[in-house]
Image (cartoon, rainbow, N blue to C red; front, side, top):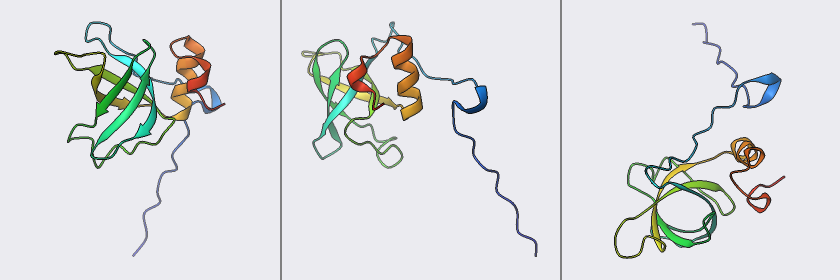
Length: 115
């Protein structure tokens, strides 16, 4: 029986490919941030671009699928309620190439990108 050949994945940003990056939606109030600390129990401590440090929870649909480390750039939706500047929900995690693209567009500061 012949084995199927696997397609090799191409890295984003090589050979002039278009990088498609999810940008924050101002209508939903989405904010970019960087993970400072993993708190355990599906909680993260995130330093956001707007100057707040939020305790962010990982929703159930992302718990086993989206692994996060300290230093990753993420997209956060602040929780509306009593303290939106203290809590939030993780919406998306960016790769290193995507974070570099966000820096080049001027959406995140240089400290957020590992150059």
